Length: 462
Image (cartoon, rainbow, N blue to C red; front, side, top):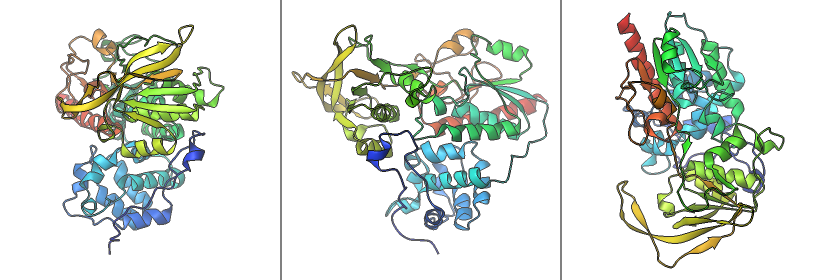
């Protein structure tokens, strides 16, 4: 009989005044008792509305049923049929706007904690799983994947399970893409990413790091080397700036640089080869998950005051509600309906403050959100010695500039059809390289779709 309690089991976590001083994982995960209790809340709906909200189409009722029965390895088997990164998705996927938003239990209460259960099952498998994945019989075909972020890893994993010889080319020295350079350790421990990648290597997927396709190799070179199809999952790593005075001062960072130094280069440990500034007061411009990550990292580096500066109200914040809540608990100060107009200089070209104006919301813009309008005469200064710009990113133009026949949107996104096929034969693309900055799970969905299309293409060619 289902557990009809209207609320989820709370996620155990570090206390805010403890965790904002360390980089250990904030959420501690469900105990077995919590997982069993939460799984019992699922009604096992016949039409499975939750599955329609999952970009990789995990059979959610089936894995939860297995969990409720205590068959955690069986539950993992269900998830892994559809997802190559279950431990990652259980931590960073925005379930509240996807699968959980479709859950029937959410009509009169809180939905089932699908993401928390996925994390529990994946972590159980990591600790208790029964050895290496079974390597499939090779099918004799070669596919190249450019970029080892969530789209590339998903495409590689799906093709690897089908017996393809897959090589993933990564520009950085460590595979994982945004999972290792962008998302902080306290949200996604890098050991977990490494383990998920290790499972792909057990399938026969190989990784070539320090390889910049478009420079050290071209897409044409990949075809010359015998690859029959290429998937481009290079993400959106080109940072945007506001174009306001003072953005060239020392102490102004893109969120990409700031987070890469901390996460990938381990600057938070204090003895990394690539250090990062430890500011006293910080303004993070933007309201998305990346802004929350940057602000929370700055706090952990010892900043006394960290501000989120965002031009709309809290209702329009694009970050996950959970990340906003965690940021507030950790002491991040929100300066909403506020927009920077100039970064001020102190001395020797260092940041000495940020001049802002107050905003009010007017009529909706093209995105459907109310457009922020400047309140005349409302200028004021926030005293900071560092500014982090987290206002979005664009796809890197390198692949486009070195690959003939590959059409892109004006803003840089690679043009594809619904199956991920680009305008160049035998080349697919997906994830942020196509859509611009989006979520991990949407990128994974694109990688999975492209893998199915690549498989179909190669089989039809014979």
